[in-house]
Structures are given as structure tokens and as C-alpha cells.
Length: 316
Image: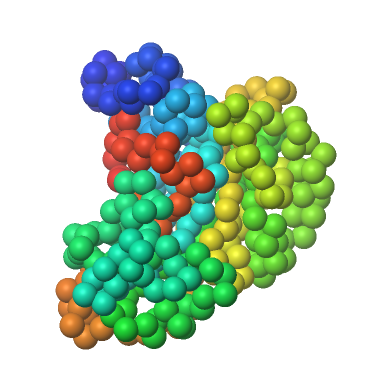
């Protein structure tokens, strides 16, 4: 696909101050960055293979390029963005609307996912959009108690993510801001280098820019600056949502950074949940991919644009 074809096919958001040329320039720059690492693009893949998004269109820095390698039970993505807005991945519990109708008629200690997630969509067509989808809002509410509620159909587990700093941190630093409880997870506990990464984050956090519109985006989150090859597991040991965002806006950066994301559903949670109700067992196709439109809650969900500006070769 030629650049002109891509340019003509871009869907520019109404609130964006960026031009077609701005988007194409960012796409080309991202392509060159991703192409410098062997785990991403093949020789035959061009700009058409990348997904281009603009998560909060009125904030230019939230432009995002994604290379998706796998988007099934396990996901693998390469990400390039100046600023990733704050969000968390929520487990979603599904109920028969004849028992819980949704909105205010939901299990206690939960919130209607459709009211919180802008652009909410069921994970695939086998999951009815007429069902009631909820997320835990009261930390005291347990998975087991929700599984035992009358009208329970099934659960859509949120994927845990593992970030890897791919770029040379001396050329482009990223500060990830994350729920401090992530460091209690056994995976992060085993990564001895995270203590130094947290110390570096505390030292440099104030030097990373936060766009004006996103004031408060990093509040109560712990800053972490990873070196090349280091990883950060975005997960909490209690399976509750793990809020996170990052800034790649640092005065000494030479270019944007590439951050890799591996994600998968935690197997022990999937094993623990009860069998699907027999009435739906043959009907439901398990969620594939990252199920972003079902489980991802953004801090500024009302401002979020989930429709890509340009699709990639794999949906994500």
C-alpha cells in the first residue's frame, strides 16, 4: 500500500489538531523504530501493517502506533506513543438481564461496565449486548461471591500485561506510572532490578512531561524507569485492576521509544472460575485478543476514542 493510499484512508478525529501529514509522519517514524528490532516487521511488511490510533484526540501526545504480532489467547504488541493515558484492565462478570437489568440494577459492590467503558462492546458476537456486564467497584467484593450470584452466566477475565523496554534507555527514556501494589506480585518480586528502576523513577519522574489536559493522570501511582531489556508486570496479586500510564516525553530523548507488551489471561483465575452455565456452554465463544473494548477502563473514558485512525494487518 502506498503512502498516498494510507493518507487518503485516515479517519481524522473531529477534536484533533493534527493534520494528515502529522499522522503519516508519526506512522513513518514509528515504522522505522519498530523495523530496527527483529521481533517485529518482516521484510514484506510496510506501513499498512501498523495500527494508528489517537486515544484522546484533543491531546496530540496520546497518538499511538501499534504493531500486533499475535492477538489471540496471548497477545504481543509493539507500542510507540509519547503518552499512554491512565487505564486499568477489569474483570467483567456477565448476568442474565432478567435477574439484573443493568445500570442501577446490578449486584452490590459492582458498577455497570457499559456506564464506565466508553465504546463498550462484548468480546465477540456470541456474547449478547443485551446481557448485563459489571465490574467490581468495592474491593471487599470477592470473585466467589459474584460467581454465586443468581443469574451469573460467565466471566471475562482481564489480561495481565508484561511490558519490556525495547529501546536503548540512554536514547529514549520512558517513565511508567503504576499502582504500587503491582510490586507485591510474585513476578515483579522476582525481578531484582525493579528496585533500581523505582529509585530511578523517583529521581526522574518530575522531569517527564504530563500534557496539561491530563493533570492528575499519575496521581497515587509509582514511577518506574526501566533500562533496555527490563520488564514490568502490570498486575496485582489479588487480580484487581492495576492502574498504569506512561510518559515518553523527556527533554533529553533523541526519539520515541518502543515498548513491547505481552499479555495473557491469568490461568489460575480461569481455572478457578465455575463452569459456564449449561444453557450457554455451546453458544459462547471464548474471548480472543486483548478484549480491550470489554475490559479496559480509562481514567478519562469519556474523552477516549477507541476507533483506530488506521487499521493494522491484525485487529487490536
